Length: 186
Image (tube, rainbow, N blue to C red):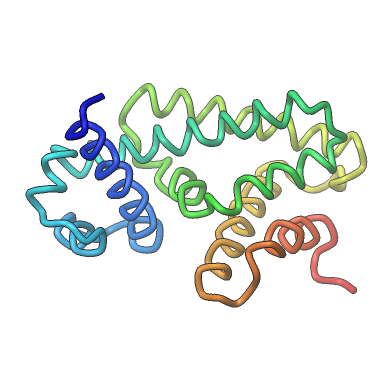
């Protein structure tokens, strides 16, 4: 890769990371505002992404790939269900904006590849929730959809609290895990 192409790829990655943080907080934000928050002009943003849909598609695929890599790595470790959940949270909380964006935007995807990948990931999560229930980590009477929604909400809450300085990055996954497993009891 030439120096120019390497810089372009690096700029594109930087724009993607900044854009997902902006869009996760305000999905209706204009591309002009996204460009401003990313520290680039509209022309630069449009050079990398021809439309809002192209930007969202790229963010969605990046988030899907990141989650796939995390779950594959965890599956290869042969952990207990409880330890696998903690490992997942430790890996995903730093990506909370992408994870939340993927879930929050899922109803608006028109791309069949994104829809198929998202449906596959949701099925994998549902299967994992069943394992958590079988191992006694999650109560059997809690609906899987509620567990999935709670996981998303807690990941987003942890990421947001880290960003605002309310909790330490090193504490976030364990707090998320504890809240998910024990609720807020003492």
